[in-house]
Length: 488
Image 1 (spheres, rainbow, N blue to C red):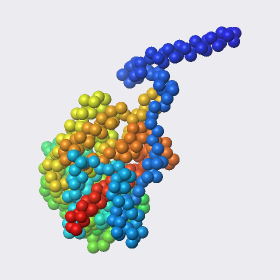
Image 2: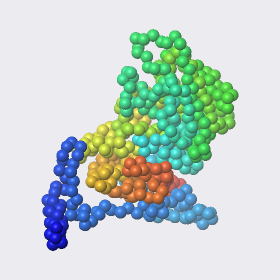
Image 3: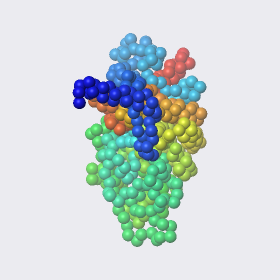
Image 4: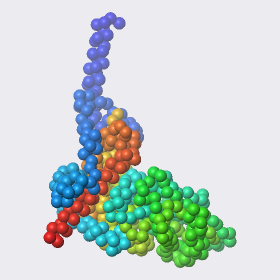
């Protein structure tokens, strides 16, 4: 082929591709249900219209709010950095409130200020896989317990669920866990799951027509301290096992460092009960052995101090937040009262997003979520609700990871549901930079988010946890300022 013909051919191909680019549908041509044919658009050729997020700046602007004194009089005589409330507001992605009423959490803050008289204040942090393994919760617990007092991990599953760094858990292999929200076991004929949305057993669920086994079954579970955990999580003085559906005696032996410290029999009662162990000194490990013809349903085991702040991490992998009406509300209410819950933190949205395809579906999800918040308020009227919205989440469209198209709509609906139910809202999406910020968090060195463009790495989880903690303590500082001004 002559050079002139080659040039004409090349330019013909370029012109043809240009025409295709001009007239090819921007949304592509759907070939099958799961495959759409795309072609680059003129705008994509000339511009990368994805906003660049300066993650380094976000990280550099992070503060340790506990090292900042907003009281100028005391700051001048201490090593604390001084900064007034208004300056803090400029640095912190704030919690939002219905009708701007920032007094909504003040009843909770009042409990924190009176924790010595109340004995204990409890927060339950519900969330999806973004918090499982005690991620995010662990840092917030560490900071709050350092500030207000308290030791211990709080609630944990009795049957091992997934690896978590705050405690080391080992157990016999005959434990089975039954959940209320994912892969529901058909052998469960009731809704008595308890506050952790699940229960565990060491014998199979028996059909009501079958006789009770004539052979005793033994099971054990052991908890030891983790070198990866925060120091205040590693020790405790009290252990409380919450259980129900106990129809025959179950014998319990507890030991610490191979020395027996407890021998007891669990109450035969179908309702909610608690088995407690109290130590006069702090301990960092304990092993329980159970023996029975039929296992009770174990709703959770809690590691606590005699007093102080408790924060339970309840990670519900696969859950979307619309889970509370799947539980026997009488049992749930009784367990919340027994736990004495003062604040619910709910962190959901990530599992719902990939399955919401229309604005109508997003709006309906917001309505469902609102009704579950109302149920929580009904079950525990004096507890406050604080919703943490989803992070940025990216999906691959053509060759690039971009924010899910309906994510901002979902955030709007979750925030609206929270406000309507009388709860507060913290926007994690905005805190990390907003639209298309997830790809920037993935690209940092070291990465702050994993390559699934959904979950934070341990480092990223701590950054987000610090952002949330700062936002919560900013509101507490405002409450303190008001209280001081009122007294004076």
